Length: 196
Image 1 (cartoon, rainbow, N blue to C red):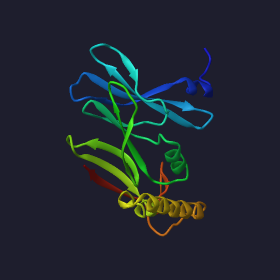
Image 2 (cartoon, rainbow, N blue to C red):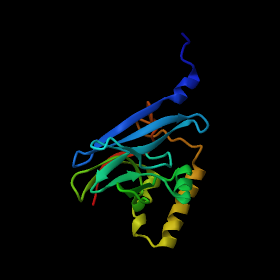
Image 3 (cartoon, rainbow, N blue to C red):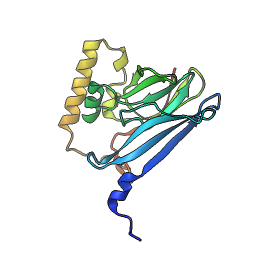
């Protein structure tokens, strides 16, 4: 019998984020797998119909790892457009949310939140509760949704420049300045938000 080789882990798929819809006839879940080339994990959302035993792949951009059922749709966060992906790669803390009908079609962007959303759940049909991580960059973008398009672009550009300027700088003037698993955390605050 051969031992497990490192490349064996690339063949594994991991199921997570199991959710039942309100009618309890549809199971949603996420399948993730290792991506050696990009040194990360890719993930997509799937549904399994408990009556027909049919499994359906709902997303295919390899970046959606959380979702919630809402009416006849799923709500998920992700960076689907080229611009959203570029902003994310630059370190801008913006979370974009999409709605995808369960019977098919294209996902529709429904809102953006100017901070990193770590977890979210519906309280009821009209209210979403979010666990968000804000920092000095996201705090300067909190009112971005109220700005006109050109002012929005200007605010984003200013934050981009500040991130670039400080990319090699770490501050240690508050405790704890580091935590296991998340690294340096200067200026990060975790808060609950309600969105309706």
